[in-house]
Every structure is written in C-alpha cells, then in structure tokens.
Image (cartoon, rainbow, N blue to C red; front, side, top):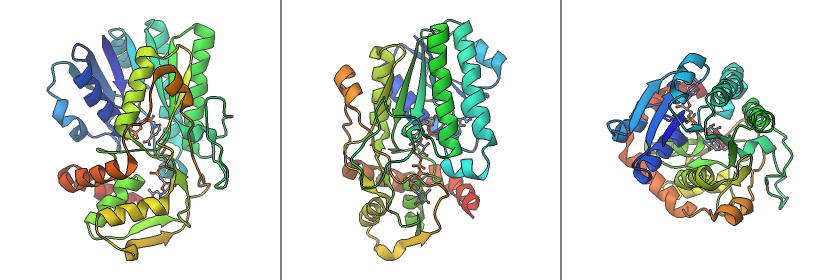
Length: 330
Ligand code: NAD
Ligand code: TDX
C-alpha cells in the first residue's frame, strides 16, 4: 500500500512515519511537508534512507503537486497543519491557509483520484473548553465550540472532511485527540519548552494561575490509534482519542518535570495569561476502545521521565530550534 503522509516532518507526523515503517514493512510512505518553522528534516533522519520512504518538500495547497502524489496512493493521512495556539493568536492567516484551504485542496485531490481512505488528524480543541469543576468529557457527540483561531480552523477542516463523505462518498475518518507529548516535539510547546529551559538552567513560564488542565497522551499511543482507525475504523466516522484519565494541571505537570530534573519551585515563574485560554480538556475514548480495542498504554509519569531523558540526550536536535522559539515568545 502507498500512503501519503502530510506534515511528516512535524512532531506527530514524524513519529507516525517511524511507527508505520517499522510495522508495515511492505508499504511505501511519501511524506509531503512544506518545512515551515515546525517541520524539521532532523526529525526524520533515522528513516530518511529507508527504501520504503520518500520525502517531497511542498505545500498541501499546491494542487498539481498534490495530484501527482495522490494519484499513486491509496491512503492519505493529513497531519499537516499550523498547530500552535499562541501563533494563531499572533497571526491567524497561515492557519486559515493551511488548516482550511490546504485540507480542501487535499480533499479535492483525494476525490478526483478515488483514494481508498482520507484520514484527518484533528484535535479535542474543536470542542472548546470544560469547566474546571465539571466531570464532563468530550466525546464524538460533543458540540463544536472552538475558541482560538487554531481550534476554529481545525473545526472548519473537520466539517469540510465530513461534507466530502456525505456529498461525494469520499471514504473518510477523523480522530480528535488530546495533547500529545514525547520525542521530537518542538520546544515552542509546553512540555519541551519547560524541559529545555530547565536543562539550560532557566525558569519556566507558567501562563496565569497554571490551573489549566490537559489530557496528556504519549505520542506513540496516538500513532497506534490512528493506525487502528485507518485499518479498521468505520468509514465516515469520528473517533475521540485521549489519555489515561490522569488529568493534571499545568502546575502539577510542571512540578513533575522539576522533580525529574532535581529542581525546586524557585524555577517557576507565573507570567501573563494566554488570551481566551481554554481551562480544561478531557476526552472520553470509550468509542475507539469499544469498537477497535484501543486504549492508552503509556503511563504519564513513566513516559514524562522518558521524554525528559530524550531531550537530555538529544540537545543537538533541539538546540537550533530553541533560539528561534524563544525569540518568538520575546
Ligand atoms: P507540528 O506543528 O509539529 O507539525 C506540523 C507539520 O506540518 C510541520 O512539519 C510543518 O512543516 C507541516 N506543514 C505546515 N503547513 C504545511 C503546508 N501548508 N503544507 C505542507 N506541510 C505543512 O504539529 P503536530 O503537533 O505534529 O500536529 C500534527 C497534527 O495533529 C496537526 O494537524 C494538529 O492539529 C494535530 N494534533 C496535534 C496535537 C498535539 O498535541 N500536538 C493534538 C491533537 C491533534
Ligand atoms: O510556555 C508555556 N506556558 C504555559 O503555561 C506554554 C507554551 C504553554 N503553557 C500552557 C498553555 C496550555 O494550557 O500549557 C498548556 C499547553 O500548551 P501548548 O503546549 O501550547 O498546547 P495547547 O495550547 O494545549 O494545544 C496543544 O494541544 C492540542 C497543541 O499545540 C495543539 O496542536 C493540539 O491540537
């Protein structure tokens, strides 16, 4: 089988390609990535010479290029996106262009080339924010209430993808996943930013009161979920994917990272809050568990430590990215 994976030089996409090449040795994976600030060929270095892997530098909005690749593929897995909420607050234009127009371009090409599956990698942020005191969790029936330009652009993409199923019978599936962590995540995002700051002896900037809750999932668990949905998911369906029910606040998570790195609370610095900051995400993954047998396997405490160790041992990967990401925040 030939797969087009878009955004495969980013965090989750590169982990997914590594995972897929190991498990599906007869498949060819073509990675189409524009190499924005978030795409790094260094994240694909360990498999770049694999005979079953091919990299194409390009934009998912380039219809001729996309058509050319899609015509040789059975499956499209779309990871390509502008993915950083803080950047979407600063300038939302690229979010509209990639996350909405780019998805539309991929869908048109998938329709024309009659592909067997179009899988859209989406987020739990499309459902908005939960109250801190609430026991509710997002599920496949939750109303879409996106609150950041990033989340709104991903919500629009989900609607477009579904419309191609209903209107054109395009065989689609969607996964809406919670926050991921693990190797190769850009140091702009919370966990790698804090780990790399601390490895450099710097403080960690917690937004607002730090009582914001996320449903952390190790990136390999996300890759496993996407694989299961591609192989056995029901055409036209959406699957919610989330962590092991250990909802932790940013402050609690920060304290865990400090502990792993033998640092004390003096390294915490509370700074001004993100505008429109979503209080809480929590995901009910009963459907994917019941229908496909998926559940998160990787324990947060253990794999947070593994992730810290990965950043400790891979300074060469993150150091060049760190200067750029911190200048963005300044
Ligand atoms: P990322 O920002 O690390 O990677 C995005 C990749 O897409 C980069 O390699 C970038 O170069 C590429 N890209 C951007 N615009 C492009 C374009 N126009 N054409 C081609 N390539 C382009 O993102 P990530 O964290 O790996 O997220 C991947 C996907 O998963 C996104 O769709 C995101 O919305 C979704 N998601 C992420 C998380 C998370 O916690 N990171 C959780 C749920 C869902
Ligand atoms: O320096 C920081 N300090 C801080 O307190 C940063 C970078 C973040 N935060 C907070 C904001 C959030 O409450 O940490 C939490 C996580 O922030 P991000 O890593 O920016 O992730 P989030 O905004 O939750 O969005 C992520 O999860 C869902 C991904 O970036 C999205 O792509 C995904 O869809």
